[in-house]
Each structure stands twice: as structure tokens, then as C-alpha cells.
Image 1 (cartoon, rainbow, N blue to C red):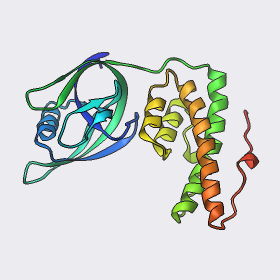
Image 2: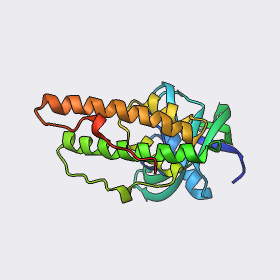
Image 3: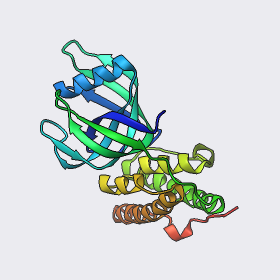
Image 4: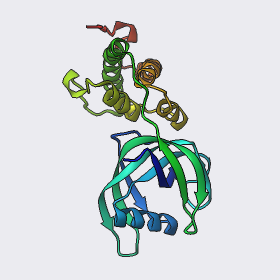
Length: 226
């Protein structure tokens, strides 16, 4: 794919990461037209977090960093609406944004790959994030009252895949997810995720402790750099 693209934009109150599945119900006329064009040409669209404005109805100003989305499934409804499944692919930065005659935004963007990371540092961070993510998911499952067993083999060993999976799994504010997406490197993203997971694990421990459910202290999590 060319590093310079002109992308139709779908500003949303969510942050899309590479590899993330994004289902959308498309009902506004402007976005129905946009998605119809993407389907016709097999083209991607851009997803960006709304910085100012509304998701539905009015204009929206998106953050300048987003992710391309590829449509993988389409359900056409009789009244012209769509139910689609899309998947995040590549990170981009916007150079210019304009409104089309159909009412949606189109941006001139540059694809923005993550900078190379130090291999040893990334490997250590992968081990740390894997352990904290497993603990986080265990506590989330306790809080929700559902059974969820996250085994070591279920988590990616590759740094970029783990960083994106962790960003998707974290139940934090969209602006914090946007900060993860704008990390210069995967190493930087993993480092931020260690801090977020540590914070969120402690929050869940306090919440579950107030319900009278014993939880293992975060300090008891053992990590290995090997």
C-alpha cells in the first residue's frame, strides 16, 4: 500500500488498533454513501477518535492519528442502512482534512509505522505485560462474574501483536487509548501499558476487596526476563 493515501474518515468515540475487529451499524446518509463507495471499490476507510464534536448528526473534529479499517463483512438492510464488520490495519497521521459534498470527511494521510524497538528491552516488556494482562483479565472476569481463563499460550509472543491486544483489552478512557496509539514505538507502547495495567489491577483489587472477595496482591505477581 502506498504510504500517501486519501481516506474517507469515520470519526468515532473509540480508538481502533491494528488487528481490532470493529462492527458498525451505518445509518446516517453521509456514512451510508461513504461505506457504499468503499465497498464498491474495495477501499479502506479511516477511523479516528473524536476530539471535538458529536459522533452522530453534527460535525466532528478528529485526532490526527488514526487507523485504516478494511471492511470484511457486509449486511445490506432494505432501507439503505449497513451492518458491517471491519478490521483495523495500519496506523496513519493526517496531513489535511476536508469535508466532501456528501457531508463526510476525507483526509490526506501518511501511513505511520512504529519505529524499531530495542529487541532486548521489548522482550523484557513482553514478559511483564503478559503477566500483568493475565492478572488484569482474571480480575475483570471476577468483577463481571464470568469465567475467563487466560493461559500463557493464549497471549501473543510478538511485541507488536501483544501491544495492540493489550490496548484493545484495557478498559480505560479513549484519550488514554489514543495516547497508546500515538506511541512512537512498540517498546514505548508496551512501557505505557505496564503502568496502565498496574493502575487498573489495583483499582480492581480495591473494588473486589470492597465486595469481600479476596484478591492476590499485585506485588505477588512474579515476572521473569527469561
